[in-house]
Figure 1: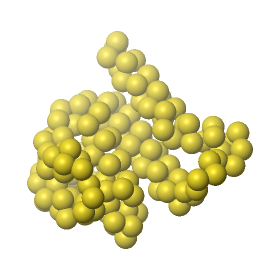
Figure 2: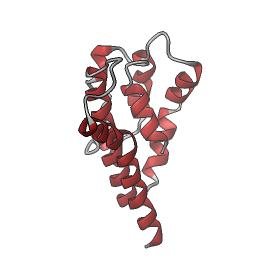
Figure 3: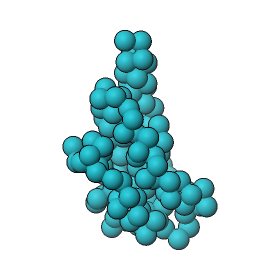
Figure 4: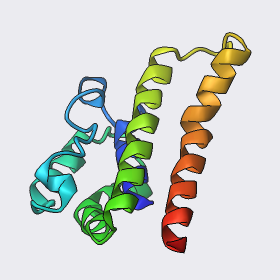
Length: 137
């Protein structure tokens, strides 16, 4: 899911300045943009200005393709868009949470490890299950 990567990379502390990290980048999936009712060009044009100077060339290239990525998601059916929106929203929440918890000591305990694993992998599994089941219908 390219949109997942676009949102997560722009959410990431390594590519986005801290002030922007928790602001407008986190997608509002009820907005006309994400529902396919508005052109993504204005949203996409502001993203390159939010990248940190140390963003990689590959990240910069992906960000320049944001409008195309969003247009592709507009071709998904309602169930597919809902699964993706849920996944990306939860992953972005987790990224913001864990960036605030950053430490070289690792996570606190098993419950914290379980929570981290859910954010980075479990929610993807849930999304894929929804997408696979939708494809079978």
